[in-house]
Image (cartoon, rainbow, N blue to C red; front, side, top):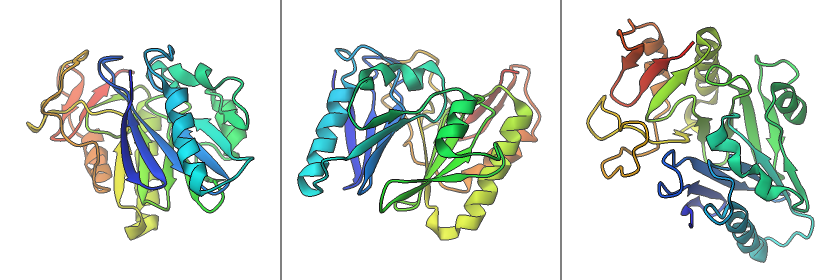
Length: 258
């Protein structure tokens, strides 16, 4: 079942797993540099017949290399976090030449990206002519990270911030992550222009989400969020929690699970 492909720019590809293959329908991202490409997440389905991720990525890289020849071109397969709907397709890349699949345990993430001061400070992943900032982001999941692409001005926030249900497993760590992202955003200034998470779960009616398991979302909101949404999340963290364990806002819902 083909993935939905959106070219955000010639060097930045957005992929979405179709709802027909898995109701989570996560978004994945493929970023090209001169020396290597970076794939963020591998989706919710392992079976390449149902989710031909390796085939799709190989085709997109082949297209890139036609105009950017490099016989040693590398691929880094990384993850916004380690939940199953973001790592299920990892096995499709086993044995692929010139490919590194980043492990999903905290210590593996720290070692690969050089995040020696976890979770306080970011590191940089060079793709050649393109640098990606890797920012520790635990709270939703212990090994979560957020990626900032300086070229496109995009903060790839995974399941930490997106138009949907923000599941908080560790309140202290999540709050610290939001504070860290706000500080990073403020330092980046106008260079940071948009946030892109990994799901859309909100309808166009403010504060109303699609039920878990929904496979048809004809009235979903766009994936993109403005940088100031981080301030809204931070304020929501200090708001009263309703009896359901949630805090409802127009573009997202905090859901506490600790």
